[in-house]
Length: 204
Image 1 (cartoon, helix red, strand yellow):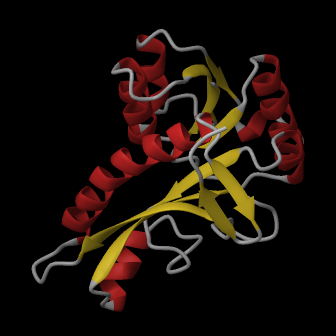
Image 2: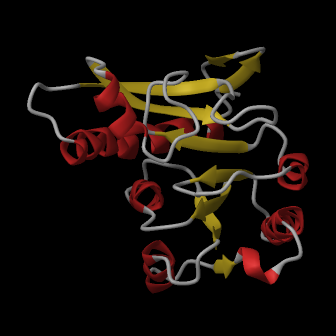
């Protein structure tokens, strides 16, 4: 399966996906890495790995919709079958949704539906006083931020001496585990969306 990976920063989840591909755990290949910041560390890493990359900075387009349309067209030309948001820091528009319906995944560092739409969900969880935090892999759909059907989740206990950095690091470990697993399930044809639920089957 050909993946289009969307990043904005360091791309640690992208790196976890690539490692799983290299180890033979994930039957996929990276068709294109898309980034909206030319100086992102993850983009540098991808280029050093020899992965095909493309940069779409917002300033180069008349609107966010035009930017998204260009990204979608480039990914389609690369034969992308699943778009994987791996730390992409902007909301996508209808132009992208329509190009990849039910074929966009995201990972969010909270147990959705708690703390959606935040770039600081780990800090929000700690400040709120929850006892269990975690991460969620979900399909990305129109009509709500971090509101698409949930594929996998992983729970992380919040410890008494936790800081935001400590909690975020433990959540990130789980992100690196469950995101490649969710992509693998999709590649094997084992995910079926029924309303708000994602059912995991035995395979196509």
